Image 1 (cartoon, one colour):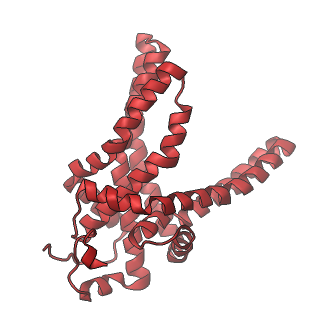
Image 2 (spheres, helix red, strand yellow):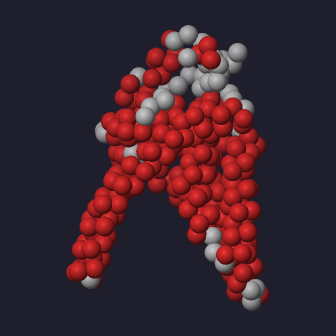
Image 3 (spheres, one colour):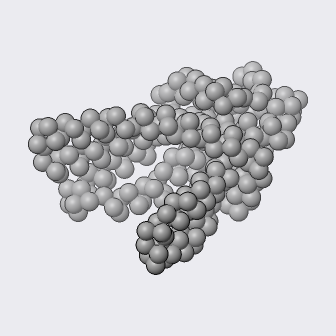
Length: 275
């Protein structure tokens, strides 16, 4: 049995460093979890480009279904690694899929919560034109950032606590109440790192395509493949940061570190005797 780790509150820098160390230590299985979904999705995108001329339907299916399936499996794996209850790729997907419907439900609820104000702001923007656009940027963007930050740890809650969709959103709102700026800053720092990793290869392909006058279809194929490859590389790190934010908030708000230290030795996440 693995020795239980000592948990504690982490600074933003420590949290990002911890996420990177976990990512580096478990690089191959993390990449494997992402690749299981994104490689077939890449093949679908190629077929869609060749036969339909675009990837809109595949992108919609990936964003709504496939990416959330991958996220649930990554959450299980990262949490198991962090708490020294490791699981295999198969076990991560098995446990993650059980929580996928609730995670998808929470995403739909978030989308609806954002959609209604967005429609109102869009109508206002169409009526007021330039002034409406300014109002959209001044009011709509901060509103979107605020909601996404307050609900940012709903997926780990739903997966790891077996919460329902609405309960996960409510609990995420509660845990982030006094730590909004901390969660926002940590998430922005992680997203900046992910953006830097993804933007340079894409810019290079675009520059190379223009320089060599490569046909549009070939450029779109290369871009689709590169985008999926980047997702395989960066999505495990993004999920690792999200899971560590979740545990850090539980430590700060609920003294999870103390409860974890004094409870009975933990079993693997898929052990039926542990429930």
